[in-house]
Image (cartoon, rainbow, N blue to C red; front, side):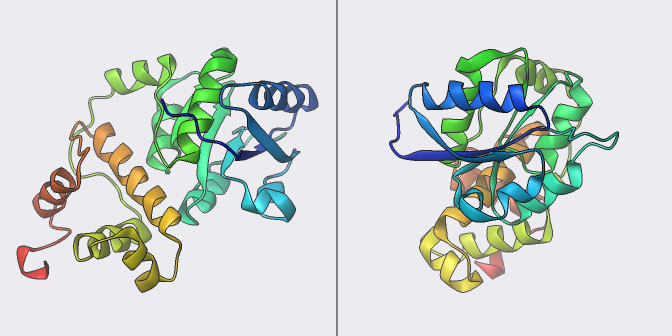
Length: 218
């Protein structure tokens, strides 16, 4: 992969040793990824330097019994690029996180190389599939129309009617980068449903099949 310069991340995990280890992996990885903030509460991703980080590395369990799925949803719906890094290795949790918009899901046994690759990919708005996630996707037999959020549907329709992400961003009052992140979330969701759409033409075909757009709208 092409190695981008100047990438940044914020780490949200309730274990100080994990935060320190992840930070060391990221800053010494290839490409190096600067850790601008870290903490045991998701608010660190919304305030200070963490608010502008390219990627949020998020643990699902932040000191309580309830997984931080609502926090994950809030981040992705705001266009943030999230890599979930969790102790949980069950397929259902991994697939749920992708459905909620995460660009990758890694277990904490998968090591530094996969985490650096996933974070660098997410910084560019791309999904990354480590071994455990590949197994979850291979075992998923769900098919049909993916569950897109209202914002994702809005971005998708505007993109089909526009020549560029910049124009979509101006229309919706968001950045071109956020537009790209929403489109990558949509592609991940289609791949999960067994209906990959790697190109704009393929995504348009899926959207027409699912009734999200009509030819008259284009």
